[in-house]
Image 1 (cartoon, one colour):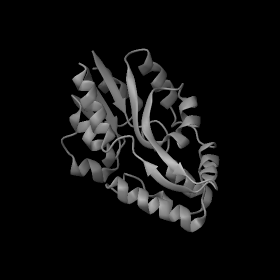
Image 2 (tube, rainbow, N blue to C red):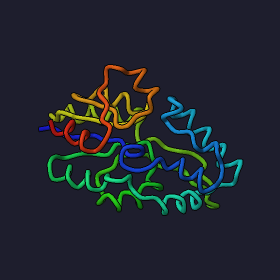
Image 3 (cartoon, rainbow, N blue to C red):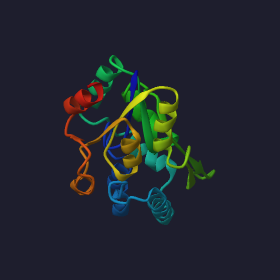
Image 4 (cartoon, helix red, strand yellow):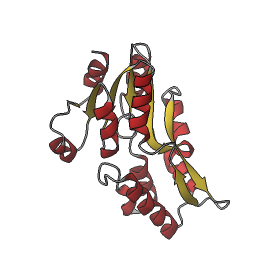
Length: 197
């Protein structure tokens, strides 16, 4: 029996932080794991920017409330759900994900959480597990699953490489150039075919 592990942002929904950047006008929040390979470096930078500009969790949640899944993502998830089990593995946060997961039919999501002060400032982030995507795949292997995985960013590489079959989904050219051995899916039809082969 096999199971799929999918990244969320950039695969099923737009990049949350980029939408926050657009809503707040804070250009520095445009950076994602496509740009900065070190997740801790990226998050420390983000927390500093939020503090500097007085952006609270409520501000971010207001931006997320305006978002929708990527075109075709909900139909893709519905089709996949009828074919095989899957888990979404994301470096996003519980406090961000709920409105988007509702639009995708509440798939199973493993992600992280935030520390929030009483005034709504985000003070810290808590990883479910260091290198959690990789460890999720190894745990699934340990209980007998063959794992297929797909993501779009640097933080998906360990998951993709640990999977029995892994691919990129619409990644930036720089990541493809650095990892020429990995297959690339350019749309949901290709991704579905890859995951169900």
